[in-house]
Amino acid sequence: MTLSNVKDQLIGLKNIAFKLPNGSLVPNHFHVTEVGKITKHFIDCGGTERKEEVVNFQLWNANDYDHRLHPEKLLKIIELSEKVLDIKNSEIEVEYQGETIQKFGLEFDGQNFLLINKQTDCLAKDQCGIPTETEGFVTLAPQGQSCERASGCC
Image (cartoon, rainbow, N blue to C red; front, side, top):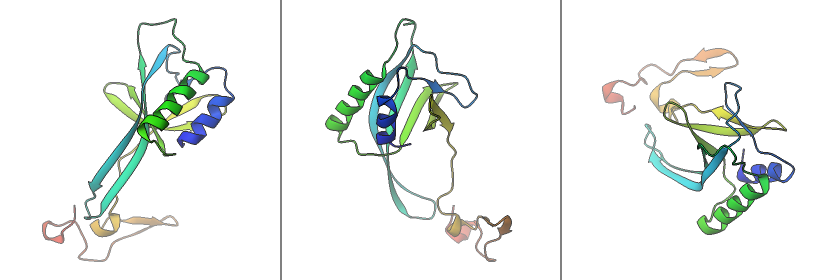
């Protein structure tokens, strides 16, 4: 979900709710403690330079049980962040405290914002000899293209 999608959804809401992957809701007294821009500049295991940019929301619970963040307030925070931080319409990443800081993707079901589990992935599978799936069949990389010490991969 992109930042513009979130803004569009906030306009029609009376209350904001975030649902965790296990189906439980983030407590109603959550705060959005950060709206930021995170830029990641890296090289993948195949040697390709990459840049990613996401908009980060950090959700936090306090003992402030009377607090409720209203949609119009979050919209104002987002608009200020866009202006001050030069935020573009990027994908949203949400941080929330579990056993450690967890990062989630974001979707909307018409009523709640859904925190979606994120997964790590190899971005250079073609260079690492990682099998790819094609129409239900596994295609193995050509012989000699494995992640052996001398292969220059992973």
